[in-house]
Image (cartoon, rainbow, N blue to C red; front, side, top):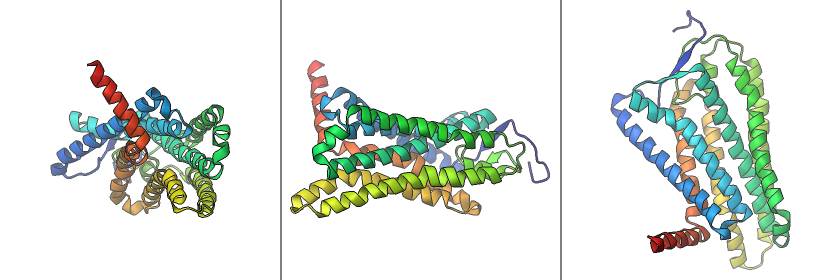
Length: 311
């Protein structure tokens, strides 16, 4: 289809990560490796947190939720690359595309909100250690997690409904490896002003800026508290407590900013950033947060010893 042939579409065609035929096999193997590593690492975290009572703490409760999000988000985005390579069919139905848009935006929003909740957890742990167990009790943790999941679930409905109502497109070929809002907006010939306003206000200010601001405020108080600690050992321990969360926050927000603040004319070059954000970041999270943590290592060793002894 071209500019003179504006029409509705029954399906879209995903262009994939690269159009170069020689790169298809390496990309497939790379994505498969990333997906299996993400799946394995996050499943290990979930199982250890569920099975080891020593990990039944607020921090690991939130990590377990984050692992669920990482598994779901990578499955939503990466499965099309794997399926398309095996089947040779790059088509995705209109309904399937809209569902992918919704689930991806929902999980991204939930990820940002959960990181904010984890920032609050770190604030309480460092700034109010004597009241930590009282403030971060089971009801509060469950309430924060439910709030993150449900609010993000509702937050993404309006934008998905609007884009699903677009009546015509200049092409049905999406310059991406999955259905996302920006590449779809670049294809439509319908009026996108309402959606653009919604993305700026709801997506930019509410979903992105507000969680970032709240996380930033948490770390302002954390840093102020750490600076008051007299011993270098105490300061190092406090910094170590927050280092994993800070790394994950910086990594996620940096890739999101680079990806979605890229001018539309150069969107093709941002597919690698999108692949990093949707594939590599979820794969790194288990290593950043938990798999190098002494508590997780200890729990893993115990479970391995138990399994070996029962064989």
